[in-house]
Every structure is written in C-alpha cells, then in structure tokens.
Image (cartoon, rainbow, N blue to C red; front, side, top):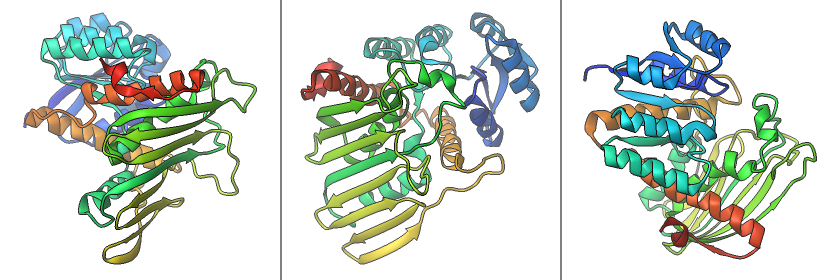
Length: 344
C-alpha cells in the first residue's frame, strides 16, 4: 500500500499522543499540522518534524493533497471542520465528543455520507487491550449469554491540571468520560433501548457534574450499570482504568484494578494479567489510553486500505452519542429515556 498522507488539525493536550502513534504506524504519515495558536503549532511541528504548518483550516485544505485528516480540536469546531473535510473529499477522523448536539452529529454523518467520505470517531477506549481481552472472552462463549454488566470508572485524579477547560463546562463527566464508558457498554453488551440516569456535583470548584450513575436496558436482554466519578478518593488510585463485571448464563468475567482478569466459566476459573504495553513514548498511568490511540489509528489505516467501515464510524457513534444525550435528559427529568426516539 502506498503511504497515506494526513494532516492533524488541533495541536493541544491530547494530540501529542496521536502524533506519536502516527509516527509508529507504517503506511501513514502526518505531513501537515494546523492550529489557531501559533505557539502550539510550533511546539508540535518542531517535536515531530512537520514543516508544513497552518493557522487556518481552509488554507490547509486548499494547499494540501490529503488522504485523511485527523481533527483533534475542541467540540465546538468539529462540525464546520468535518463538513469542510467532506466538501474537499477528504476522509476524516474526529475526536470525541463528536459534536455539541445530536443534531450536529447527525448532520456531520450525513455530510460525509453524501460526499462518499469515510468518517471515524476517535472513540479509543474500546480499543484498550484489557477491554479487547474482555470482548474476546465473551466471543469465546466461555460465560454463555451475558445478562448483567457493570462498567465502572471511579477516580479522584486531578484531570483539570492538564485540561483546565473541563472545569468550566456545564456538562462534564458524562460528556468527557462517560461517553467512553457508555461506548464500552455498547461494545460488550450491544445497543441500548432505554436508560435512567442520576448525576451529582461533588467538587464545588467546577461547573458540571463529576458523578454519574446510569442504568441501561440493552436490546439483547442484558441490564447494565455504568458509573463514573472523579470525586472518589481511594487508597490506590485506579486512574485511568475501567473496571468491568459481567455475569453470564455459564459464568462471570471480572476485570479488576491492576489489569487483573478473572474468568469463571465452562472450563473453570483462570486469572490472567491483561496489562497494556508501555510504548516507548508512553508514560504511566496514561499508557493504557496511549496504547489504545495507536490501536484505533492503525484500525483507521487498515479500513482505508480495505474499504471497510471503521468499528467506531460516525454512524456507529451516533448510538453512543445518543446515550450521552439520553443520560443528561434522564438526569434532568429523573425519568427513563427511550433511545430509538432520539435517533429518528
């Protein structure tokens, strides 16, 4: 396969991980970077040896011949940038949260579909190796048919030091973190028919909610609880681990702190270590997420080469995004929310 030429738009906190991953992937390279902040543009451009730099996305698209664009900006700019990429016929990866509203997300999916342009949302949590290991056990049939799940992310980690803007939004944990945990629930147990949600704000210094508890009915019959917290102070800080409990007709799966996977099923009980690799450019405790960035970007390159739809395509992500909208609506109304009604 001839090498794919890509551009990165947005050179902020998380984009450095994406640039490291692109450097590790054969068959793709970032040939240009774009950011409205000249200082961020210089830092990332210098660090990764990218000399073609733009402060305006329209100039980037006009000047460069691209096989894809990786949009790593904040959420408010996603729709105009995705629509700009679609208008230029450029396949696009978009960082999460995909859009400010479900209506925006639907419009972005439609714009790319109408242009015949592949669209993938950078929904990387399901690509973490421990999560993939849980999915592999489910696929093996070892625990039979799952009927209950708990997908949990509880931490006291100070996420605001690296991303101070997170403290200012009226929406916080469901939009920023819960979207990942909800996507894991879909990945493991299938699409959701209805949900009930409750939220709290424990930290008085932030504008949004920092605790969320969501009860979901899955279309396949399973029930799950998704619980997220940035107000949970533990003896051993688990950040950024997602902990999982799954009960099936023939056994159970437990992904515990420290990446310890215990499976009790048809062939007995086995315990294994499913710790992620520590990539040369990664650092603890972020290495779990950093490895998943490499995995999802490699998946994107493979999909562009094969013509397959990405696992976290824009169309697929609408179903995860709908859960975010439903969770906020359900927390406000304190009533169950039907998911299909949001997707119409």
